[in-house]
Structure formats: structure tokens, C-alpha cells
Length: 339
Image 1 (spheres, rainbow, N blue to C red):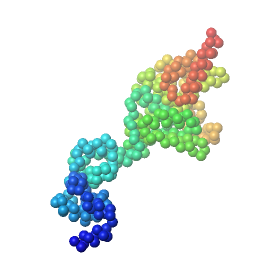
Image 2: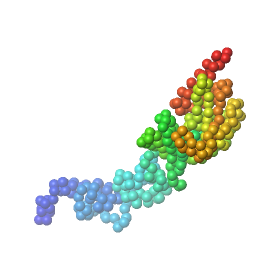
Image 3: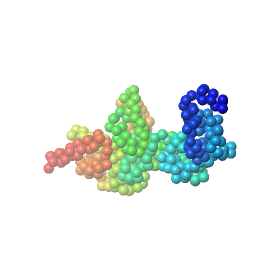
Image 4: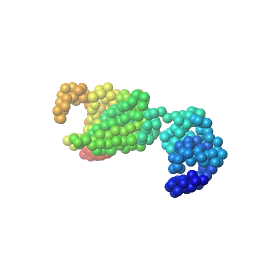
């Protein structure tokens, strides 16, 4: 009795109050249902472990065997927390008080699929490509024209799409193309160049290669959507000396030949690709060309008008849309002058 009286005199008021008001149902829930250890309960209630052991004894709550915990979490609850809400096992432990090791054991018992390391460590959510074939064709064309695409880790789940340019409209377009699917990072360099990189999931693996899929070359709509993407990346629609012209250049001769052949197949006459700048020649900035640079174009106004009408629904680049409309207006005015 003297010991208890001394305890009340020495102990802080909040400690006494928590000791006295610890109800049986709360202690049973923490210890038996949620499987908290006496250390965890003491920490949660801001008291010492001895107090918890004493209260368990007073309430005739049998202690668990060493290493054994009764965990009352259903498959439905674990499925909701882990798979639907995508909480980590760390967060589930914090929310439920159930140790991570127990959470992992329950996931195995309930046959719930566990996330791999790449998925678990994903900081930013990624969405699957929507499957639209015209959009897919456009993205492939844009990729071949001006995008660097890589998979940083062979067994990873991230596809990185990057580009560097001095044209703000190009950055804006790339951002619009990919921000609905994943995180997009933009940074301006000291020399005025803007770098952009999008982080996508593996549904965009179709961008890893640089070959034109055969289906695109066989289908008229898919082809012109693809070509619009290529043009938005590095095509040119301009009016020179009061004459609208179109030209497309690239280091990949085979790609340009396939485009040239396809245009003729769809009844649009154009010039055959030729070498524009030879390997070893220096450009205006003093850099040497590592290989031959090829290009071809369309100059005849009747053929150019047919061509521009075909690609018009698929062009997305703000500057190219403006140039395309100016070129069409130029052709119409020239035609009117010629009766």
C-alpha cells in the first residue's frame, strides 16, 4: 500500500490517468485482435511495458506464446489496402499496427499478388497507352523523327522518352502527348536549349524500335497519321519565293524511301530521296555530319494540295498547323491567278 501511495506522489499526472482509464476492451483489441506487442501498446498509450503486463494480468487476458500473434485482418481488407489503395506494407503496418512481416505472410496465405520492386518503388503513377491506333501511328512517326527512347533497366517497368530542342512549341507538344500517361520532366539549360523527358510504363514499348510497322504502310489513315508525327518532329512546310513547298529530311535513307513509295502508292507524286548533305561536311554551326543526310519534297501545287489535305487532320504541332494553312492559302491564290 505504501508503494502505491509513493507511486502516485512521484509519477506524472498524465501517466496515472492513462494507467487508471485503460479499459479492457481497448487492451483486448490491441493485444489479441490487432496483435500488438506489449512494447507497441506501451508506446502507443505512452506508458511503460510493465504497466501493460500488469493490466493484462488484472483483466485475466492470457498472454500469447512467444512469437505468436493473433492477427485479425481479412483478405478483403488486405486486398483493399494493398492492391486497390496501393499502400506499401510500411504504411499498412502504420495504419493497422500489424508488423510488415505478418502482412507479407498474410499476403501469401490469401494468395494475393505482391508487387515487384520496380512497381513498389514507383513514386509517380503511370497509365497504360489507350490503344488508339491513329495516336500510336502518330507517336511512332514523331519518335522516329525526333525522340530518344530507352529502357533504363532491362527488367524494369519504365520507358523513358526524351528530346532536346530550342523550340518551345516542340516542348509543349511533347508534354501534351505524354503527360496524361506519366510524369514529364522539363529543364532549360544554360545555353538556351530545353530538355524534356517523359517516364512511361511498358505499354509504350512500341516506341523502342525505329522501324515502321508494316500495318502503317498498308493503311492510308494510319500512314498519314504516322507521317504527320514525322513532319511535326522535323518536316518543313514553307512558302519560298511565293511558292508553297514541302520537304522532309533524315539520316535514315530506308525510312524516307518507304515514305516516298507509300506516297506514290496513295497517288501523291513526289521526288525521290536524294543526299542533301554528305558525310563529313560541316553545318552552319561547324559540326560535321556523321553520315549522309537525305531528303525529298513535294513542289507541284496540285500534288502538294492533295498531300496537305491528307495530313491536315493529324498535324498537332502549333507552328506546323500555321505553316500548313499558309501553304494551302498560297496554293489557292496561285490557282485563282491561273484561272
